[in-house]
Image (cartoon, rainbow, N blue to C red; front, side, top):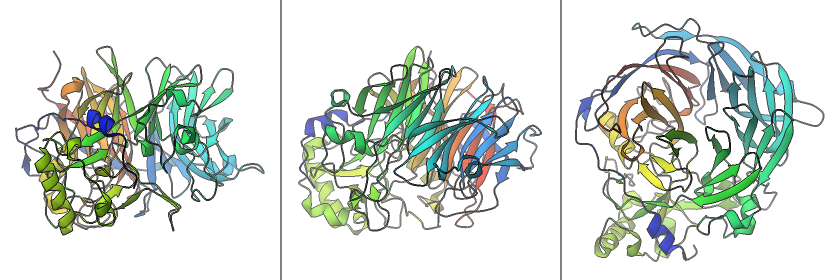
Length: 561
């Protein structure tokens, strides 16, 4: 590990989450009965489900799901079948006490549609729908991880109308609300390790009217902030290959794209029309010594959320844009992601168990705002000498002045123009899941081992979607590991309020019910076939899509006046 020279940057960017709520309520969903300190302000019920008929403990079955308000159908990526499945909700009924079983209407075979002498289908990774032009767009990767992928445009039935060349490994596709542009986040991972080729990450921008394709790359060192992390001891000159665009959110006016660079713990802002990177800003680190930022970092057979001298890299996967009271915000699901390429016998890796690096850490207690120097040092010594923390997964490339972990185990709200943190859910996710599912706390999505994820990334927030119900704005965050969806009222971004946690996983078996949310979709009441808001959840391990109906909206104590 290299001695950090970012002490002042780390110190200035650690955060203080809001104080925890002190009220109690009772959940109304399957398997939940324990009272908690978090009041429920909405009721949610699963009313229907679609089952692909297969599971996979490694995921990749039911993934990204999108709803078409024109034909009342949802389109979901079937990673196992390498298709896009189309499922109708036209006959969906309001909650009646009996869960409705949905049937596939048809599948779109993407491989057959795109394979040519010049292109070999590898994977379909993402999709979006434009009802103003009656099209579905999808991102398709090449089988050769070093070659460019494609953006394909289809009609609602899956007939290909147009294809565009994307960058290497397009992993997410996004349409601007005005329909003028299609964008893809081209990840460019070095899947064979750095000893082989490391493709350049990019954002592809398609101007729909003219067909012009621009590939935006990260070559301008002047727009990359000094505290943005470049892996493998890299410099800004290495960013063009090191950055791996993950997810895109677009401003309401269609002028700016916000791109998560998960492994670099950063977000890039792009001028869409100009095809130019405006900025790349680090998100800083979450100080787990601060009250409200507790975490369970030990695998010791018990639930134990603690304040610890640990800095968590937010490392968001998904990002959503929302404008509230005239201010542009970004909402992130702070998953965390390790670099381990190739997966077998990694040559490019930046994680290790704490036990393997603890003696190399030259601990700097001044980095922590929630403890005195003496308290921080004593807590660090406890971590080093207690068996439960030895398999804590830590980053090995952020410096050796502290313990750096992956992900925030939370969701965050940032000002889009500055990436200033205005809210973080702190320790909410682990607290709520521990209280409502104490017997399966920090389960993973592929087995039934108690507390397995405590030394990893906890519940692991994956996707986030924004929805408006009445006059209130909500964020919905899927938890990839234990499962389920957290809902928060974010009408007042600085004082977001927990609204509900709903989870339709069946914990009687390792994999049963709805397991491992990968993609979410919010459907507003006006577009919903039941005339009530819906949340669709694509569950990649169980191969299911759950349809959840929001039943009742109650009062919201955090609402901005």
